[in-house]
Length: 368
Image (cartoon, rainbow, N blue to C red; front, side):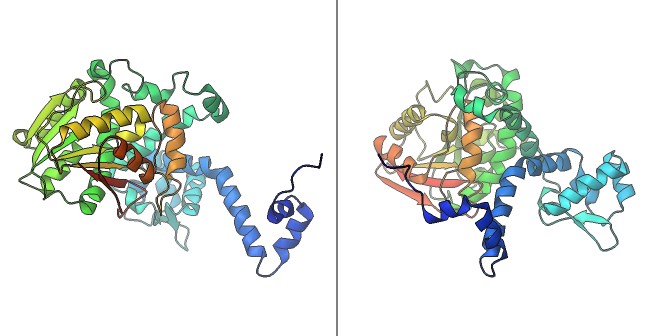
C-alpha cells in the first residue's frame, strides 16, 4: 500500500510555516498571503463584529452620533457608559465603518452607520440576532443534535415545531410577527421593483404575516385586489393593521395553515415571501402543489426570500443555513433547487429574476 494521497501543491505549501514566512516577503506574492491571513482573521473575529453592531444599535449610538461630530465625553453621557467603554465601542465601530473619527478626535456616523439612522426595522432584526447567537454557543452540539432538541429560535418561531400551527395562540405570535413585519418592507421594495404587479387582478399572499408585503403591493397597484392566508392569530393582527392603514376594505383574509388547509382560489398571482426557506422540502413541495391547484391557467407564483448561490450574495446561505438549523426547520435553496421543486409540482415555465439587492432577497417566478 502506498502512503497517504498527496494534496495539491498549494495545500502542501501552506503546511510549511517556513515557506509561508518567505512568501510574506516576496514582492507581488506577499500581498496575497497577507490578504488570506486577513480573511482568516475575519472568520475568527466575525462574532465580535456582530456583537459590536448589536451593542451599537442597542445603546442608540446611531441616534447619538447623528448631527455630529461629537466629543467623547458628550457621547459617554448620552450612551450611559464610562468614557473608556465608550472609546472602546466607538473605536471598534470606526474599524467597522459604523462610525468615523475626525482629526480632532470627535466621532460621527460612518458609511455603514448612516443606513441605521431612523430605521427601527433594522434595529429589530439586529437585536433578534441574539437568539441565534445563544443557539450557536455550541455549534458542534447543534450540528450533532440534528434538530432533536428545542432551541431559543425554535421556541421563538412558535409554528416551527407546533403539531397544529393553526392552533398557536395569539400571545405566541406577537414577538415573531414583529420580526416578520420589520423584515418584509425591506424585501417588498426589491420584489416589486423586479416584478411589477400591475398585470394582475388579485394577489394572494400566503403566510404573509401582518401583511407588510400586501400593503406595499396595494400602494404600488391601487386597483389590485388583495388576499391573505395566515394562521388565525396572525390574521387577526393583519386585519387590525389593514384597518389602521385604511385598507381593510381591499383585503380578504383566509384563516388557516397552508400546511394542512387548501389554498383559496381566485387569485391570478400567489406570493410566497420568506415562506419556503423555513420549511423542509416535503412541506415546500406540498405547498407548491397546492399553489398550482389554486392558480388559474397562466397564473403566476412568486417565491421571494434569501437564496443560496446568488451572485453578489453567495454567503447568504452560510448565515441562513445555521439560522434554520437552529430554528429546526427549513434550509436556504438555490434558484435551481426551486426550479426542480416547481416543475415537480406541475409548473412549466420557471424563471430566476435578478433583483437589485440579492443579499436581501432572491426571486423565482413560475407560471402555470
